[in-house]
Length: 486
Image (cartoon, rainbow, N blue to C red; front, top):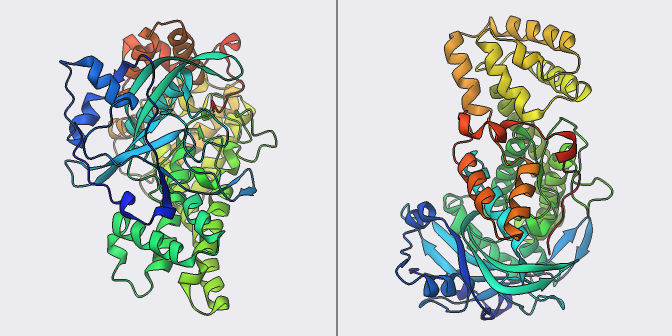
C-alpha cells in the first residue's frame, strides 16, 4: 500500500522511540481521501475493506514501515516542558509523492508510546473528524497544512470527560519536525543533536541553503519567513489556532494540530475560543507576536550553530527576529490588500484596511461574509455588504473611501469582482457546522460530516445547495468554546 523510504528513523536512537501501534478491537474505515492517496502514490485495496481498515488503524503494520514516536519538548502556554514527544501518535514512515516531495504518514490515536505520560494513547471520534474537516478545509483555502488521509473507527471506547467512541486519524505532513524538536536537544545541552537535526531539516525542507555561507542563519531566516507568511494567511481567513505552543509549530511552515482551533464569526481581534487559553495568550490578534516569540525559542536552540562567538550569534539571531516583524507586516498587508481588491500599493492602504476592520468590530460584522459581500459592492450592489453592519451609514462612508482608492487601479469592475471572489471564501468550516457534524457522527450519522466536506471542497464558489454553510450562526447556534480533545 505504501512505498516507504524512512529517513527520520535512520537518525540516532535518541531522536525517537521505536514503538508499534496497539491493535484495536474492531477497526472500521469511516473516510478515505482518495484524491490525496493518488497524490501520494498510495494504492488502497478496497476489495478487502477489513484489511484496509486494519492497516489504517495500526492493527497491521505494512511492509517497509518503521513505526516510531518522535521525541520533542516545548513551551506550553509559555511554560517549558523538557520532554513531551508523540504521546498518542506513531509515525509509520515516509513516502515520496508523485511530485517528488517526501511526506510523513502518521497514525494519531494508535496507542501509548514512551511519551504518553500516563495517557492511553487513544483519540476520540470527535477530535479525529474535526482534524479531518479543518485540515482539508485549510488545504482547499490554499493554506499550508497537514492533510487527512483517513479516519478509522476503532470499535472501542475512550474515557475523557465522558465516554466517547474511539478513532484513529491518518495524518500526512511534509514532516513532523517542530520547534519543540530542536528544544528537546538544546535543553539537554546536546549540540550535536541540534546540528544533526538542523542538517536533516536543511536537507529535507531547505536544500537550497546547503551552499549558503552560514546555512544555519539562513535556516532560521527561512523558518521565520514561512511562519510569518503562514500567520498572515491565518488572519486572512479568520483562523485562530488556539494552542500555538512551540511543539505545535512546524519547521516546514505547515499548520498542524487542530484541537481547539476555530474561525471568527463576527470580527473581534481579541477573540479566544480555546477552553485552555484562559488568559487569551493565543487570541486572534496575538498570533503574530506569538509566532515571533516561538521563532525566538528556535533561535536560542540554534545559537551554537550561528557563530562560535556568542555575542555575534545573539546579534545574528536578533537580526532575524527583527525581520520576522517586517516580513509579517508585508505579508499581512499583502493578504488584506487582496481581500479588498487592491493590486497596487499606495500610502494609506493600511489605514483603509484598519478602518474597515474597526467598523467590522464596532458593527459586529461577520468576518467571512463581509469580505465576500465586498465583491457584490464591486458589482454596484451595496446592500448585501452594508447589511453586514449594525450601522450601515458608517459602512457606506468606508465604501466611498474605498472607491476613491480604486480609482487608482486599472482593473475593470468585472475583474475586480472576480478577483475579490477568488480570495475571499464563501464557505469556511464555520464552528457551528463543525459541531453539528461531530454531534451527528457521535450518534452514528456521518451525513452531516460528508456534506460539510463537500461544501468545503470549493470554498470560493457560491453554490445554492450549500447556501446554509455560508451563513453565520444564529444566536442559539453560536460556539463560544472549543476543546483540545486529548
